[in-house]
Length: 100
Image (tube, rainbow, N blue to C red):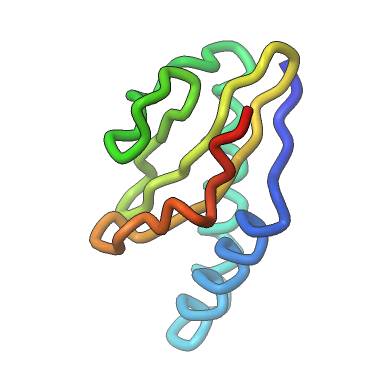
């Protein structure tokens, strides 16, 4: 199974890394490496994360990494990472296309 990071998800990871780097550039680099490594497990277990509560579709799921929600969609041949959000933030559904 192929994993695709959407442009929005890459932007979110960059924003979070920028925020972390204010205090510790090395920790920001480490965090980015670890979140990408964490997501790799979806190749073998695409339905590992629970369904996203805000979306009533089984193929929209999330992983929790520290204080962050990694929201993704499982399709027939790929997993698309849709966004990464702090768990206290509201998940704006307009960011996630539900047409698939």
